Image 1 (cartoon, rainbow, N blue to C red):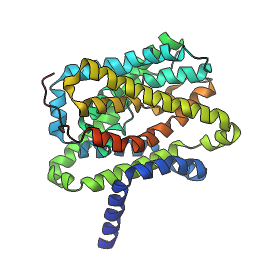
Image 2 (cartoon, helix red, strand yellow; image 1 turned 180 degrees about the horizontal axis):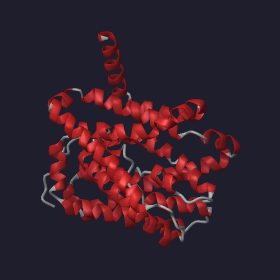
Image 3 (cartoon, one colour; image 1 turned 90 degrees about the vertical axis):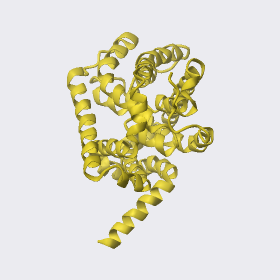
Image 4 (cartoon, rainbow, N blue to C red; image 1 turned 135 degrees about the vertical axis):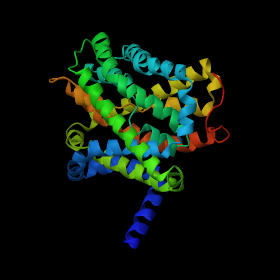
Length: 328
C-alpha cells in the first residue's frame, strides 16, 4: 500500500511538472486512439466535477474574499463576457464570407461562460486563479439565462435550453463542489492542502487529460473524411481564442489599469477559454453540423494555447502581487 501511494504521489508530481506537455499530448491522443476516446467518454461529467473540487481546494479562500469585496468588478466582467463579446464577434464575422454554421458557432462560443477547468489552468500558468474562479462560477450560473437571448437576437436561432432546468443543474454542480470543498477544509484544515499543492496540480492535469481524450470521441472520422475543412475550422478556433483574449486584455488595460497585470491577464485568459460543451448539450435538433464541428475542434486551442502562453504569462506576472490590493 505504501509503495502504491509513493508511486501515485510521484506520478502526480511528474504530471504537475510537465502539465502543458501532457495537455497538448492529450488532445492528439484522443485523435489517434479513437477507441480510448470512446472508452473515456462516460467519464466526462465526473471529471468536470472533480476538476472544480480540486480547483476550489487549490485556491486560497482569502484571495477569493478580496475579489468578492469588489462586486462591481465581477458585474462588469459578466456584462462584458456574456453580452458585449458575442456582439463584437457578430460584428467581426459579418466582415467575412464564412459558412453560416461556423459564423453562428463563433458567436455562441463568444457568449458562453469560461470553461470549468479555467481556474485550474490559470493556477498552472501563474495567474490569479481566485479571480478566474469567481468569474467562471457566476457566469456559469447565468449563461443558461443569457445564451438563448444571444442566439435569438444575433442568429435568429431558438434554443430549447430549458433555462430553469439547466440553471438548476449548473447550481447543483457548483453547489455540490463548493459544499464538498467546505467539508474537506473543515475536516482536514487548510494546511494539508497547501502542503500537497504539487499533487493537486498533478490531479488537475490527469483530469484534464481524461476530459481531452474523451471529448475527441467521433472527431477522428470527420478529420479523415474532410481534412482541409477540419483544419480550416481549427484555425478559426485559434483565431477566436486569441482574439477574445487580446481584446479583453486591451480593454481592461485601457479602462481599468489599476486592477494590475495579474488580474487583467487572468481575465483575458478566461475570455478566450470558453465552455463549448454546454452549448453542444443544448443545441436544437437539426442544427448545422458545421456548428457542432466548430465546438469539437475548439478543444485544440483550449489545450494547446496554455502551453504556448505559460512562459509568457509567468514572465509578465513575475513582479506582480499575488492579489491586487487596489481599491478600484
